[in-house]
Image 1 (cartoon, rainbow, N blue to C red):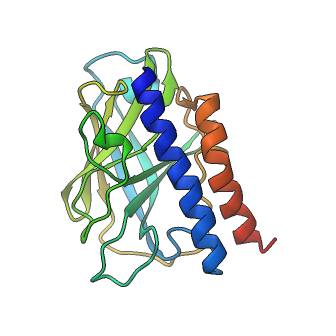
Image 2: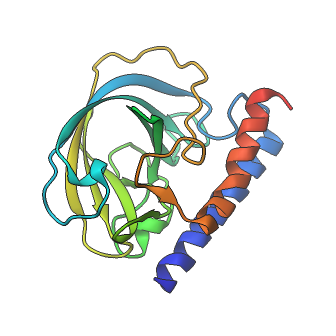
Image 3: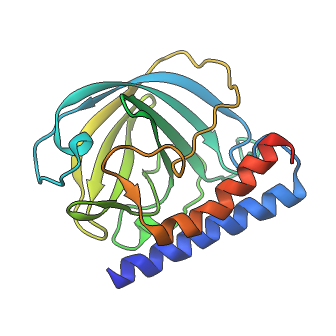
Length: 213
């Protein structure tokens, strides 16, 4: 747990620093992931496997979701970039957001950002969530251009598949939808207080940039 926390802290600090740096040199509605494609999707949860105490991970079900795919810095396509996937699930409690960025899937690399030339790399939430069974990291691994499998793992443990995400073939307009996992949390997946402290500077910078303050 101590190693997981240290690696997660390093990843979160890097994300906050990158957000501040990009916002300082480029004025845009979004300091990171400035342009993207917004699509609808269907998330089919299979349930089963190890019980985590989080209904969204443990129980089968179908969610209609909103997804935004983007590049973090926004360099032209031939250049490498960190690819992102923002996922919004609507529940009776309100929207719940998860943000994924390209990383590895190893015990260490799941906490480290990994730029690449395409969107075929796996992605993780980079920082863990608190659950009744301990820290959970969530991953999205591409299966095809518009299909992903979703997995979760306990910190540095083995991955367990729990859902498949299929996106609409048609990309819609890209309005300023504010995906924010600090403000919009899925039931049962709460960020640790130290994760919130690491993430909040990055999201506060993004909110202020979007609002023009």
